Each structure stands twice: as C-alpha cells, then as structure tokens.
Image (cartoon, rainbow, N blue to C red; front, side):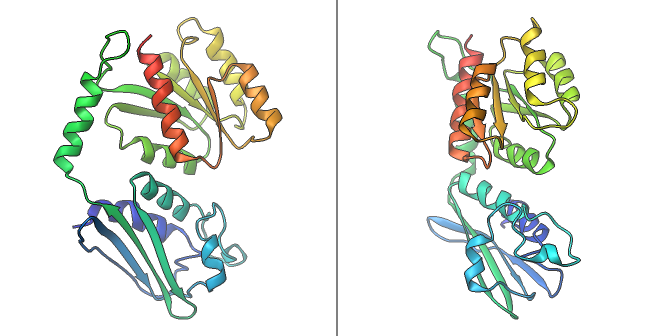
Length: 263
C-alpha cells in the first residue's frame, strides 16, 4: 500500500533539488515487513551524491551545491521529511553513487491503525485532569509564523494529534485577529517577523483581557543566552529555538496545553 508513506516521503524527496536534480527517472515503491514496514522508497537516475556529502543531506537549506545552478529549491524538503519520520518512530536511509543515481527509503514501525485511533480518541476525550475535569476531544493551538516551511513542519507534526486543532497565520496581524476570534488554548509564536515582531504580538495578547490568560510559546532562531533571557522576561511561557528538537517540542506543547485546559 504505502500511500501515507508516499505523502510524507516523496514530496520531500522531489522538492530537494540537491537530491533530485531534475534529470533522469524517479521510481517510488513500497514494501512490507515484520516489526517494521518499508513504507516508501525512491530511486532516481540523476547525478548522485558524493559519499562525504551524504551526512549533509538533512541539514536545512543545504542544497549540496545546487544553489550554484539554475535548479530551483530551498533545501528544506528532506529536513522536514526526516523529522516527521523520526517523530513517528521511523528512520530514513540513503544510498547514492555519483553518475548513477540515488536510492532513498523510509522505515516505520508496524501498528494497528484501528487500535491507534481508538487509543488516541479515548485519551483525548476521557482522560481526567488533576482537578477531575475531562480534557476536551479537540482543543485549539494557534501558530503565528511567516516562514511557510516552518508552518508546514509544525502542521505535519501536530496534524497527527487528533486531540488538537491547529490554526496558522503567516502574518502577525492575522494571527492576532485569529486569536481574538477563536481564543485558542495555546499560541506558538515566531519572533522575527516583518512588520510586527513576536514581542509586539505578545504585548497585544497580554494587554487583551480575553487573551492574556493564554500561554504563549516562542519558537525562534534567536538562540543566544541573552535572547532566551529576554524572552522569558517578556512573559513567554516557554522559549524554543530552531531548528526544533521535535521531542522537546511535543513535550512542551502537551504540558503547556494540558495546563491551559485544566484552568
């Protein structure tokens, strides 16, 4: 079958011009296994990658020299693909030979789809909080971020959470309007944005009586110690730096969200 694997795997492979330079043929296929499923694999007959550069293929925005050519791209596709696969407990592998082409594959652990859905829905709708309140079947998280790649990454990560509904805004002004309209349980906020930065958005949220109770988590590339200290002093509930540590990100979202819905 492998259609879900294709959705996660092939776009990242196809959008990364350093890996699929637009020449030659591409083949996608899926295989089954025992504990793990080879959920998707792709062959191409393109330029190939030299062995000492294979370790660099998952670095964001590293196009392995393709930026010197006429091939369009950003170098973020495979980074997103690998992170999504790792969140699901899988792995991504590659073999390549210069002048021959490359083979990419992903492996995901076997699981019962029915059991997974039932377990997720049960936890989301019936798990009691410390005060005896039940967590709602679906609560809202708002992510304000001007970078489309980051929006897609977080959307794919949280999209697997059936207990959360994600709203996104690519400009801060729209984000603030969405916050007022939906009053989310949690706001994820970039800091470096054009026009209005994250600190200005945070100040608007803190000044609004209907929104000031909402926890706001910073997600930013500003990772120096002084940046983190400034963020905490400004009132961010948590301060996460890019590139995201996915495990920590999921842990922070779950902890802060649960604290919010139990209030």
